Length: 116
Image 1 (cartoon, rainbow, N blue to C red):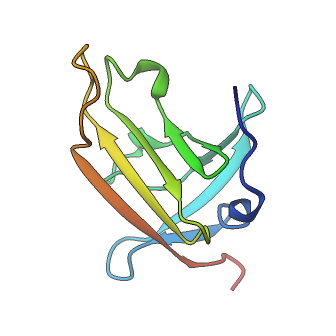
Image 2: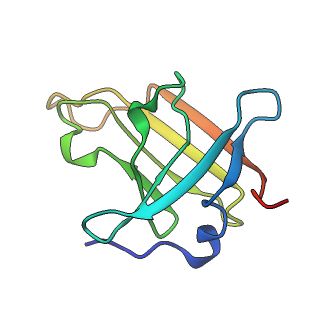
Image 3: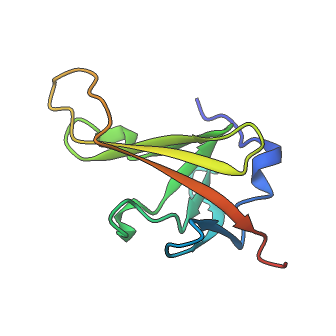
């Protein structure tokens, strides 16, 4: 079942800048998808690939492509307690091998609100 997004974290995903001070910065935006779930875009994958757009926010958890994770790469993560850091983990296809460790983990930090 879909869990509504954490109200505290909602204020950090529309027009806000995330990333690393020395790396490319990502402007994050959100909208409700056709199922009424909050989907957000703009966080780059470890390889700067738009393939990872369409992340769902459930509570403080972030989900991407969970439905097809046995066949395709997937990602998941969560906001920190203060909603100013995101930890994303990326996985290779499971191919029936059970739980695999992530092949990479990415820490993304809140930089500033779009209006500031």
